[in-house]
Amino acid sequence: MPDYIIYKSDTIGTYNLIVERYLQNQHPADSAKLFGLSFRDGASFNCWRGYQAIYKIENDSLFLVDMIQCGTLRQVKRDTAWSNGLMKKIFGNEVVNGKVFINWFTGDINFPLNSKLVRWDGVFYRIFEKERIITISGGKLSNTEDVLNYVNAPHGIKREYGVKLSDILFKKVKKIKWRKLPDCDCSDEYVITIGPAGNVSKVALAGENRDEVSENEGCRKLIFDALRKLQFDIIKDKGKPIAEDVYLEIWVEDNGKTENWTN
Image 1 (tube, rainbow, N blue to C red):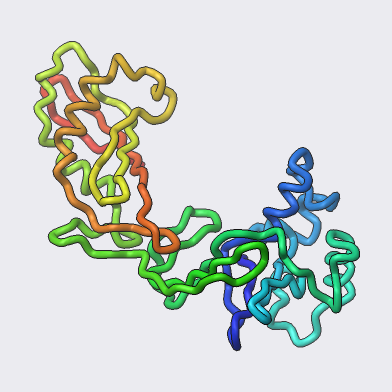
Image 2 (cartoon, rainbow, N blue to C red):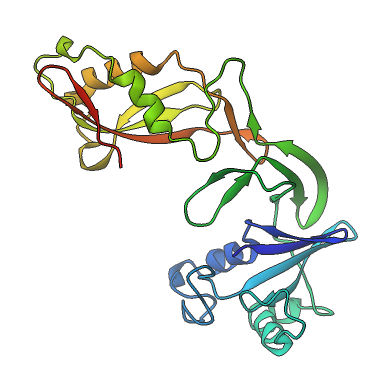
């Protein structure tokens, strides 16, 4: 479950865990707990931290205005005593009129403007196609910007959410003439990096064999040469182009036939 930010008249989910980041910075040695609280107290599998923070932009300043029990945002009657007690326990005298001025935070807060998912890390963090970016400096609002996180490149290969990129890469890899390397077994696990510009920028080993760089150099060069001319579309996070790693596992027979073993 995300935290929430109240911006103008909307209450919107945000995957920027500002309070959680604060707690971890204040108590790095106590990573299994939240400010002395047991790791799982009040937690669930989809809200491991045991609370949801609610932030608010007010008078161009960023405030923490509530810390609620997971999943209780829409409840008419929330446990306000629990919420107030938790805020007081963490922030003490910094709680003024029921809120905390988050003057320690400098950075970007993003939240979606549509529901089209671009990327999900499989656990928590999500990138949406259209987002609003609020830039905060020392707790003060300094800029707002609406951005697109998915951009079609001219004649580029689509990598929208749900597209299996390993299959696209394998179509090129299986055409490689492996017999150029008679003394090298290229059956292995690879990480293919698609750079911010949408081109394949690196081929590395993955898994247990990632340190065997020199022994596999010829294989990686063949794979890179087969993929380097591909042009993919552009993926961004908070409006800035990002690189993406794609896992690919192949098996190469002695006769050069290649199989896709990617899970």
